[in-house]
Amino acid sequence: MTYTLKTSRLIPVLALLCLLSAYAARAQSDSSGYFTSFDSVKIHYEVKGRGKPVLLIHGFTGSGSDWKYKPLTDSLLAHGFMVIMPDLRGNGLSDQPTVPEAYANNAEAKDLIGLLRFLGIREYDAVGYSRGSIILASLLVRDKGCKRAVIGGMGADFTNPEWPRRIGFYHALMNDTIPGYEGFRKYIAQKGLNPLVLACQQKEQPSTSAEELARLTLPVLIICGDQDTDNGKGSDLQLLIPNATFVEVPGNHNTSAWTPEFAGKVLSFLMQ
Image (cartoon, rainbow, N blue to C red; front, side):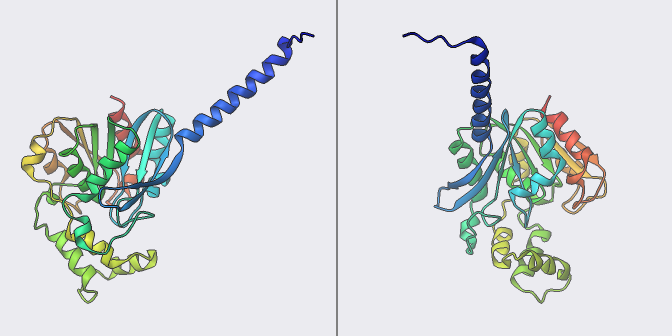
């Protein structure tokens, strides 16, 4: 006996298959997990969306999940980008080594390069903010896969290996009697962060040189709040990078990355 499936019955079946396929694609694009880096340190990451990949690098005392609450992430997802949000070593859900050597020799940039290769990504854009921009600069001189980069909340001061701001934070984290950092120490205590881990990050923080930055050829957007001079002037950093543009948005170092203006400038740059 032969059975014939009527068209009226076939359409709902096809619709169900399409729906299941969409859910499967969504499951593949939204994921989280751990990547084991070159020295066995486990790096936590989260991926959302589908499309051209954008690596988002968080700042000091932060984590990759910080980006989920910023307008930039929603803007990128709405315009068809895929966002990759790792926790840098020593932060968030990643392993937190308590020896400075674990952060030395550009370890954090090496983590990011390894993670991208683990995810099968060879070409990508990247956005860093604050200390994330320092790690991004280190990444840019070591990996040609980045095609556009946004350096947020950062001037040229980090290029100095003896940067007083970095050294000051290191000593304040190692010795809680140093005056002038009471608010910072209260903040990290409230967040439940380990001062020794943070001190290790500051001690071995990379200082990409002006000579290295001068050899970059990719387009770079430098973006700072109009009230932000915490890490030097963005306009000074622009002078060190051949194909760089500098823009300002409203806010200080703690607020500018949360603004729709920041999201708009970054999105416009990445869509060029």
